[in-house]
Length: 339
Ligand code: SAH
Image (cartoon, rainbow, N blue to C red):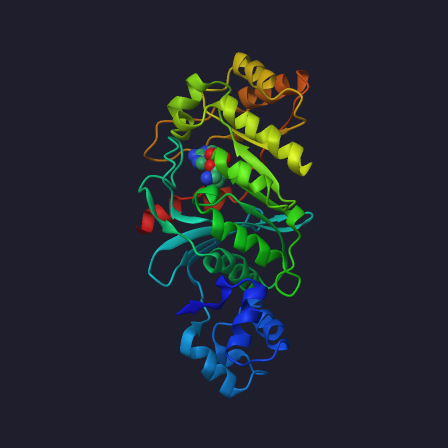
């Protein structure tokens, strides 16, 4: 059985043609799917005969809200979604002045093994399909009843380890007949899958690429991010420069500050030297405590000192504001609890 949301618009049009349906049917169905219809039965302007034809080979996929938490402090909403096979993923909707932003998952689990991250603890279960990635946006938006205008692919999983489905998702979420979310309003975060960064540069998609760097040297990065054994920092930076050259889109970097590991003034200076001339923005994230991990964040003063050191060296850096602190659980922790 085919999930209709795994089709791009043109593929849907082709498919409908192959079962004898007129061209306009695609836009009709696309619009129902992206508004969160849960079955063909809801598509009231489509004849029973057509619906029956569709039901022979295809279905409308859904996501069940298994748990939902709303922050009393800032309105952040955290979802634990259950997939049809019983697996769970997390998505978070944050309220910013410029609109609602959703943080979505790209895989069930993750095989990248970053030492500080909760999502990777049980390894990779499976990739999400394009439809499952999309459903997080569709059903969160439907549940909240307000338009989601921005997406960050920073939930569970490594998006460039599920490349084809992520690309299909990007095309679909951007399609004006569906959710119509601008590519410039979408950020993809990667731990540094270098070949994927080269491939992405060729896709002609003006999204924002952000790199989870977290260390200024191979010596440190090797100890916290296993991907660094495969692709060294110099190769990663080379790929970023190529991305900028090919797309004209500036890269940004995420840097989790881990006390005593990567947060000294010398580390800040090393980081500034590494990314000099790239015009890149650095997002500093005080590391979130994960039960199974020994890493701790520094004090507010130390965190601000790191930021100020970067700024004094000409690097554009900010400390990420913590949202939804009362509903706890940075990504991966809810899912881990129900496993
Ligand atoms: N796999 C992708 C996207 C998911 S993780 C990536 O690695 O970029 C989203 C961001 O949260 C990454 O920068 C990741 O390194 C970071 N992160 C994971 N666990 C964290 C923790 N405990 N504290 C702070 N940041 C964390």
